[in-house]
Length: 100
Length: 224
Image: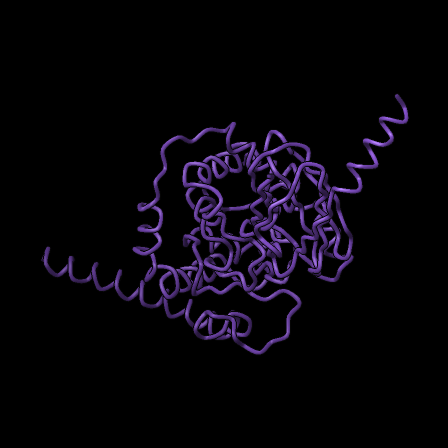
């Protein structure tokens, strides 16, 4: 049974992808992305000030809190959904996420 | 006789008013002008750590202007005291005069536009509950959960030499309508030099923004 779980985890890890999202000049780059369940979004911060990415999507809810310049934050996609990630400080930042 | 008295009375009012304005203009041109400029746009070339408010874009009433001139901006929530307390230099009547001059020169010509910006808003359901939720989600990240202008974001900005100093909302003079207009259109619209206090009109509707204004006005602001 343990072997089966380990193999399952290995397969998930092998097939899940990482997607880099940069936060630059108060914009998400890219600002629209299609991902799969199990994928990870890696948020970089190329601005010289902090950001605070979050979503209120019920299936994939998260809130990074303050993300300092130069630091990365990661979040795994849990369920199929279409949702928006925003910055709580900079209202023009909006990232559309489509989970296939 | 009645006509003569009426003419004398009107003349006194007119001359007093003119004299008052002239004193205000004189004070502006000898004191305020060095930071705020002749046109109120603060393009004076002075290198200050905090750029003076662009008076030509001000939203303040004459009474609010007088309070700031008399007591300094720090008293009313500004982090910096670069806009000083002028009651040490000028008498109340002089401060009244310069406030009247600033209001008439810079704000009064825009009153119709400011009123239209408010009147054209679509405000329906305003609740403290909604205002509190938005305040905690967005405003508190800069202004702090109590509105005192202290937050993790401000600390980080100092560490990264960005030096963001949000207003202490507990002390602000703005009324509910003015807070609403500030939140809707952002600081640039009302005379700040940088887009640090953003416009929230794309994210929230007018009812949401008035709910935040209500929360700040009724819960965050110190009761005086």
